[in-house]
Image (cartoon, rainbow, N blue to C red):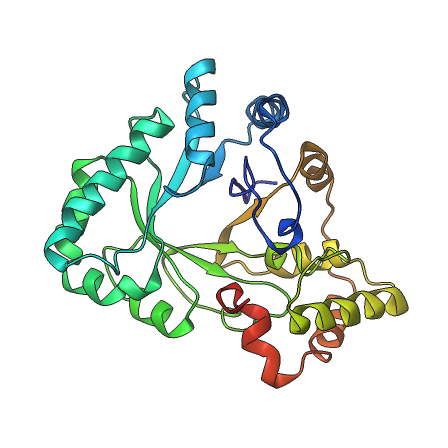
Length: 288
């Protein structure tokens, strides 16, 4: 799949609502097998963040195997607790630390991870862009939840790439227009849309998940397929980030076949079971 970027939040950690209560230990052998498979099959694009354990894991693999072909994007943590005068040094330190942990000289894209840093970014975009150029970062990016903030950054000449959540129940970023490189994430909404065995105390999530799988059984809906087909229909989405719990999941994705038959009908059916009052609680993991 040409559009695929490997999400690495799961590498060595419990990420996502599907894994919330699982005791997941880092299995170095399985992680190495996963990354070797990626390398051997030219799956060279990875998304990580400075506060993910996967930065170090990727870096060790790159160093041990003399990898030169990986395209890696990472993220700068939130700046909200820092005084403005300290933020520039923090950005530099974050980039330097990521380069060191990843054992690379160049990063494809560095994203700001907290959309609430947008006012500081807008006021200092030129200076921040110059910092990125100093470190030979190819693209300056932003990871967002809000359509309103997207509309603001979509006009910023320094921002080259924007990550947005898009899936069958999130309407906020459907039919967007942009000359930026738009990256789709939350395709499966941390597993909420494809995992029927969630262990969560969040009753809104649990109730929706139960309804979703009951509907899928009644209407013979392949949720995994519909999630992927839905996102892939948008030409504006240049790449999609997908994380995997194991190698078999990745192999399964590589055998995926596009099929738009009954797509619109099934998406409408799924959205019909969402109470309007629960929309934000369902679609924004920050509210979980």
